[in-house]
Amino acid sequence: NAGVTQTPKFQVLKTGQSMTLQCAQDMNHNSMYWYRQDPGMGLRLIYYSASEGTTDKGEVPNGYNVSRLNKREFSLRLESAAPSQTSVYFCASSGMRVDNYGYTFGSGTRLTVV
Amino acid sequence: DQQVKQNSPSLSVQEGRISILNCDYTNSMFDYFLWYKKYPAEGPTFLISISSIKDKNEDGRFTVFLNKSAKHLSLHIVPSQPGDSAVYFCAASMSGRRALTFGSGTRLQVQP
Image 1 (cartoon, chains in turn yellow, orange):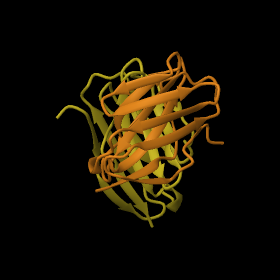
Image 2 (cartoon, rainbow over the protein chains, first blue to last red):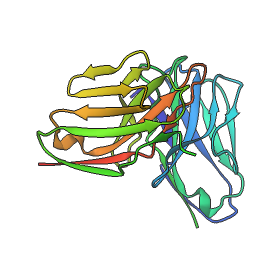
Image 3 (spheres, chains in turn green, brown):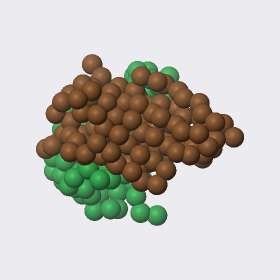
């Protein structure tokens, strides 16, 4: 099915380990986003890429890096995981305008850092 | 400081009755508002949106109302169905920026 695919779906890391969350979309969208969801905090923007070749910080970028590999793929890297990064991570994509339909989200990656 | 606020973490209604979910915002630059629905273990899905030039938008059982002077919007679901049980997120955007700002969500439980 067309949409946004995230891998892995679940991951447990030890403090200090690194990992990359992968995201790919097949809707030919220009913009892609990484959000984290925490209880009582809603969805908070980590990084976004308005178009291929550009990335910008969101509300909570510390401890993360991103790569817009091509138009389809946008990865999120944790260089040295911390327990505070335990969360559910969502990737999303959108066309040139976020109105009307907004984002299309992936199904999420549940990350636990112990 | 949260720019989009959903002050009710949860709401329970009976099947067939009206569900009203509320959202407040503080940034007067927001000009487009969206509601998303989220089931457990799934990503949020778009439900309905409204431009700041309108005060109402309707789509089937779902209606969103916008009161710009009060910086308040609400989502009405009539009639409510058990399948509507989910977490609902309010989101806002402003011209020139694609990134959405989300509220903390309201968990709706529709009792059969």
